[in-house]
Length: 497
Ligand code: NDP
Image 1: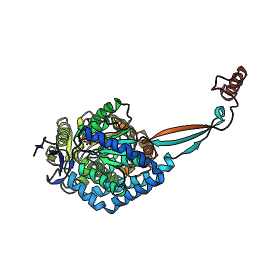
Image 2: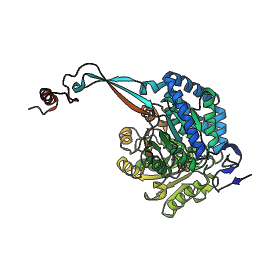
Image 3: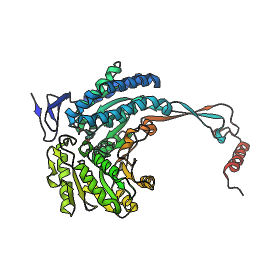
Image 4: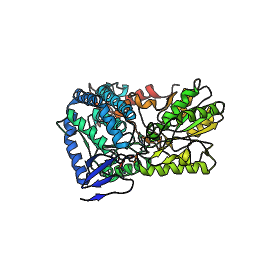
């Protein structure tokens, strides 16, 4: 028996990855580790499957995807329990996560034809003799690389779009959540047994690298900004297009006319759900001076009721505990104050809710992704200052605004891909809305019409429907026809005198 255990990483034994619960150490399951040849083989099998799957057409795929959605809905409790067993996330939170994933599968199945199907487009005067046709064709095989923090919703956001568009998918789940990833693949195979349309390849980070280089036609990556850059560099070697859904440092702005109790409730949930291990989690709050004291008091009162091991699960990745501790220590060393929790909040594998105030804007706790149940709250003079400060980090994923008269105006000024007004994170559950970031949070979109289009290439076809009135694109045009062309261009586009 050959066992390898690297501190902080899941164990490998006899070619199997052993997934364990971060709090109890209980085994959640074992999956085979893929080597480079196995990844290449999976992509080759996916290529054949992709042709079959694309051949089913929108209706055939819709029927299968809706059947998969139904399996997930039927077995949602089982999925919730498995997610808790493997990652430590409370099962109720996992059920909420699975609900959003089910929504996205349903939406992608029902909307793929509308968004991607063949349509006629209007012609233009200069080329009136040709009709225009547009459709979106699948890439072929899409590689999906997913993180551990939302092991159902995050990959399914890409997988549902890629499958609905007619691609086969090879999925590399995080090494911390391979069992949930495999469960998704196995349930899909129950409704699509004919071909390996959706497969998983398991292992440590290098397996993601193999996938990028295995001939996939597009990669949808969700994970940290640092790994996103490596993925992009690997994909650049073969000009493989990528979507990068990376980290965040999302801010909430609380304006003077905000409902303070609602804002505090949303800040606590947005910041501390999943123990703060949420890409679109609220990590910073900017509250205007007139409501600052009341807001801080309400946040402390609500967050103080949350208990580790109950509402607050363990920190999944052991090395993240060091990051969280460093951020708290740095904030306090540099003049910040902990109005809830503090240095002693980090007690592996848990971190208890921590609320920091008066933290310098250039500190790690304000600028870097903390990924723990911590919040910084900063007093600002007005919404303008809040927007400036909220936008002053390299990340730009989501955000939140609480207020009435100016809330939407403020939301539009936030440098981010999504903003929730008078709630936190709500945009992720609306399958009609695109999801993705700007800056260090990445580029490209999943979910919604834009998300579906990421997984298909626009194909333009023009069809001659008659002779050219002004033949231009031919060696056989006459000088008189060129004169007619000049006259027409001037009539249509020249400055009117
Ligand atoms: P990582 O970047 O560490 O890993 C993401 C995935 O990439 C994992 O499957 C990982 O495998 C794989 N990977 C690691 N190294 C490579 C490589 N060289 N080439 C290809 N793939 C590789 O992120 P985490 O799993 O820690 O996830 C947390 C991060 O994800 C946070 O920053 C969070 O904000 C972000 N995130 C972003 C979301 C968004 O939609 N924008 C949503 C959810 C999370 P392995 O695990 O085996 O190392």
